[in-house]
Image 1 (tube, helix red, strand yellow):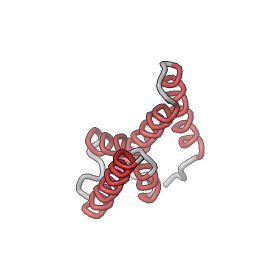
Image 2 (image 1 turned 90 degrees about the vertical axis):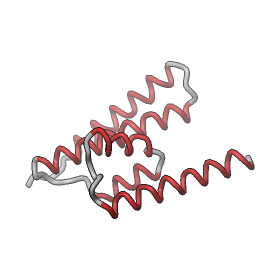
Image 3 (image 1 turned 180 degrees about the vertical axis):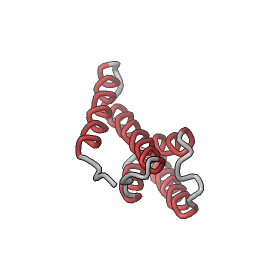
Amino acid sequence: MRRIGRGIFVLFLCGAAGLAGLSAWAGLNWRWSALVGLNAATLLCFGYDKHQAVMKGRRVPERVLYALTLLGGTLGAGLGMGIFRHKIHDRSFRLVFFFIVLVQAAVAYVIWRWW
């Protein structure tokens, strides 16, 4: 097995930063731009992890996928699970994913309601 190089993560971050910069240039608020970039990075990580799973290479740790989802990459994670058909049969991963979605929905409701 090969070790995951830092280069692939730098590539993900550059792509996400580029997308965030492009959306900021297009006139989106910086918060929305950052969210777009984070979701792009999450989607790319899910795709890379699926590729590594097929090639029997070194995988992206689940805690990294969870962290990206928790930080706001929920849409990217959901798209990654659907597009790449990745982690959809792993019951424990799906339970944690949906728990994260519920927590984020509750936080969004509280912010919307009382802020």
